[in-house]
Amino acid sequence: MIMTKVEELTNPALFADEDRLHKLFTALRKDTPVCRVEPEEYRPFWAVTRYETIKDIELDNEQFLSNPRSILRPTEVEQAALKAFGTVNALEMLVNMDGERHKKMRRIGQNWFSPKNISNLRGNVEQLAKTMVNQMASLGSECDFAADIAMYYPLRVLMATLGIPDEDEAFILKLTQQLFGGEDEDMARTDGEETGAATRNEVLRDFHTYFGKLIEEKRANPKDDLATVIATAEVDGEAISHLEAISYYVLTATAGHDTTSHTLAGGMRALIENPDQLRLLQDNPDLIPAAVDEMLRWVTPVKSFVRTAKDDCEVEGVKIKAGESLALYYPSANRDESIFDEPFTFDVTRKPNRHLAFGFGPHVCLGMHLAKMELVSFFQELLPRLDSIELAGEPQVAKAIFVTGLKKLPIKFTMS
Ligand code: HEM
Image (cartoon, rainbow, N blue to C red; front, top):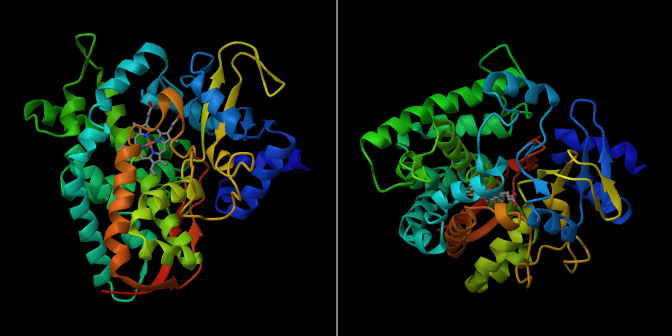
């Protein structure tokens, strides 16, 4: 029965139906933790669903490579990217680099994203959190929390971090949504006749054009921002390539945006649906950092990354041939009953909470400290001002297989 369903792992609608998705993951973890998937429109892959196995694969980046295929994309999209950009990945991003080049390229952003440097941004982030919470208050007693608040706040933080002008906010927001949420009818590009692969490449071309200009601007007028760090970065005494610099921007602008928005909206929903946890948090604000980790575990907005076996090997007794790919399902790892007590309970006091929402090992999320700071700052600002909150309609998750979360969260609230 599982074998017939598993092909649905490439169906965006499955990821919008979280109960069904988690039932599938639970069954896979139990019976077929390394399961062959042969969908029609994708190259085959192995679905890996247990926590420890995912961690082991992530740690062994020499044997399990990121480069040849870092995320699941339809074969048609990969072929179109190969034709248009010379690589199935379309961009030269950290997430699809391996070995020394990856280490050196990662180092460019590592200092910037270190907890110490990020703590210098705290004042700005807290100010932005306050602005967003004020905006929520100004909306009266009802809003769509996902679309009106959660979608914009991380974007504002990113714009400030990268040094991108405020007036470009709407443009970057739209492109990011088109890149990640492309399968969802509400988020796909609708300004042209073409759909699918061609459209996705158009979105990438728009990113190329925008960030190409930004590089020139930052080289001419260096500032104290991440965009300048990338524009002027060198590896082994040589400037990084134009494609590598553009890819760094695209990765930062996209990786840091929908992921955090989805966690914020999904975390809010979890608090509404678990009023005892909301009360606990309001009475004990010191629990907010732990609650944010629980939100990350609960929502896990990045559904998978892919690794490719360098040599023939065995994973949990299953023979994997060189060149075959393995999709690492983080939402499944984060509900693994052998690691988490009562994994389907949302518990803001959970300890320890070693979730894999940010991945693990050499590719672990570079922006994790920034993301956590944003989420903590928002709830620290909102919770003392919130008197009541409830759902005002059915929440809706966007249909996408890579990064997804709530696109609609209608709420009613009272706040000061
Ligand atoms: C990588 C999740 C926010 C930048 C990743 C990975 C995951 C992830 C799962 C891949 C890890 C792996 O392969 O082991 C998340 C989540 C976020 C978030 C859940 C928010 C809730 C951010 C932010 C930024 C960012 C705010 C930057 C502004 C990156 C970068 C990488 C990455 C640059 C690539 C690292 C590498 O390949 O070496 N993230 N991320 N992320 N993330 Fe995040």
